[in-house]
Image (cartoon, rainbow, N blue to C red; front, side, top):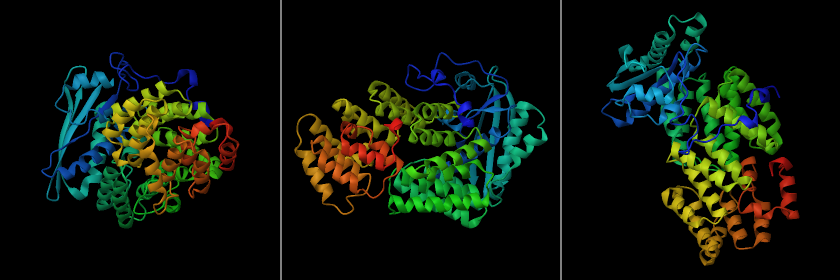
Length: 498
């Protein structure tokens, strides 16, 4: 309960900007406060474009370390600066005004053999004057100390001489093994792609990092996170069923906590696993509250905590937690999209689409946001908009088989949908989610609610995300049906979440 006191009241929730993005809005930017900085993504100056992961990883680690300094230095999140990737040649004063910061850091990373050359400079946005610049030539095995030196130099240039606690916060090393760190950064680059194949690559990198340094708890937490996200979304990873992914996620989260119980992300990993089962949502809240006690600025923990609250029927508090995540890291596409999904459950279609539009402005390649927007559009009869989303990227997710058939059925031609439902039911493992949700939705659109309920009753992986899908179109057409309501009761869906 203590954490709910820190969440904004619901009458002060963030609104959207006219262009569909979250605030602060263009033309209504707040004035920059003292000691605020934005670290733009460093350019990859290597000949090998595959080295981009290293430039990104160094940038994000500098941002993370500056965030540990405390009140004397305020740094913009990686989400806030993401849209300026590749914009280092643009006027820093303009970028500074848009981001409401007093200084901008730019740089580049070049790998040549086993050497790294990193250049960086800080510009005062009010005047355009260079406040600090440096070039570092190091062995690639010195990348960890290089990141510490960069973060320390930036913090000192902004705030002056660092306090002992600030210097210690910047100096904390996630691992002492440079090779393990390199694999960790490669894993992060794959995880950001959010596809089943990318999840498998990320797992391979994180597991290699953990083998090289068994005490590298951040790598263990990321292993848990990848398996946990895959099981939560019922997405295949390395050929595993969702329940198998969940068990591996739980084991990795436990290992991470045994390695280091003082890391916020390790408690987040455990909370992510626990929140997936209706019977353990309560303990998930406790784990996530522990993560937030260790780091109240952990936006991902606020995001998952929001789900835990919503799964318990505390919708207003859950939505407020998502807004808290956005206040910490403006421009988080996944959080913006989930606000849209929440509006869709309430049948607020116009508002739902605005949030999905925002998520896609922030990340045009965000397939999940495009998928849920396609369903929201189809729910209220916008078949033209649905076709646009299908053409624009839903071909990479399970809706690809049912999307065109559902659109045709909504316009009066059910032949294609009937054929697709029959084809899917004849396939092996037809009870696996998300395929089962597609088949059941097809049956509902065809008016065969009894067969749809039979199918749903037999599904083998009923996690909390499954029942969220059961609350949106076309499953919401079953509201009031005694059998449907009993099913939700059996799955421990709180009345307040319906």
